Image (cartoon, rainbow, N blue to C red; front, side, top):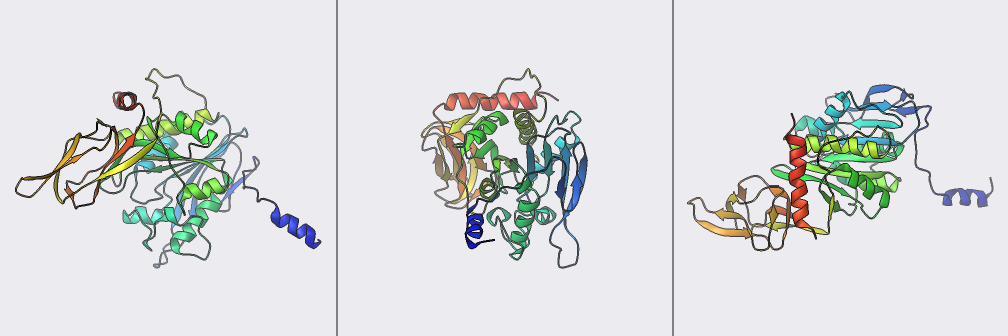
Amino acid sequence: MTSLNVQQNLLKPKLVERVSMNRLTIGGVDIFPGESKKIDLPVVRLYTDTEIKMPVYVKRARKEGPVVFVSAAVHGDELNGVEIIRRLIRRSTLKLTKGTLIFVPMVNVYGVLNQSRYMPDRRDLNRVFPGSTKGSLAGRLAHIFLHEIVRKCDYGIDLHTGAIHRSNLPQIRADLDDVETREMAEQFGVPVLLNSNLRDGSLRESAVEHGVKILLYEAGEALRFDELSIRAGERGVINVLAHLGMIRKRRSSNKKIMPFIAYSSSWVRADTSGFVRDRVQIGDQVTKGQVLAEIGDSFGEIQSKVKAGREGIIIGKQNIPLVQEGDAMFHIAYFKESDEVAGNIEDLADNLLDRE
């Protein structure tokens, strides 16, 4: 080959890996059209010589179509997504008409074992992508997940919760400037959409770099199951799969949830330390100057009243009744149509919790 040809090859863009409809290989295991398989994907061993494996469940239709991954527990203490995937796998009505569905209920297996957000090396897995084969423990796990799962997909849905002692209203964060991603986000079926910038080292950033359209679902609190968040996530994944033509659309008598895009959001922080008495809850509409919480001392004297700076919707809040000065207490999203958003939040709860 001439030097010119070599140079031309180096300048060619690398093609994103995609699944051959004849065979999909994950961790050395072949999955053919029409098959469903559970796979234990080997990752890095513990120092006790215990082998750790990432559980993967693959479901393939006989007909060619999109390849979608659904992942959970990138942060090991965020468990709602694990339950969402468990319910989806066991759902008898989830029958693919085309394409491939890859479930990864526990990406950060180490974190789940330790009930911790982080890896054993104290790194945040969602800040080390794309990782490498010779990097840190977190970097090696990120590399395995990216190359064995993500790069073989067209679309992805990554399931998250708030941090420990913090809850999030069901919401989608994504690059809403991308038309196809925005359509998926709108079809998911939650009232709040946030146009979120890509973070360096995040799974979303690496996925986008490899041409994968991805949604990040945030709902609930770490180390807790929240039924509304779980049901909204389960229904949202089904809605996206139907939108992509991978399953048949089903008629519903429920009220349609209209999505609204927040043009910005911010945290309201404590201006003093003490004991907290909340005056508002997740999903509440608040007005400028409204009291969100009172902070008092151990004798019951009110030291400060935490107020909203603008009208908006509470989409996240701290749950622990103790704060230090500067702690983030309430996450407020701002909309042009706050009244309509609040109404759709009520409809979401009615649709998902009023039926047993």
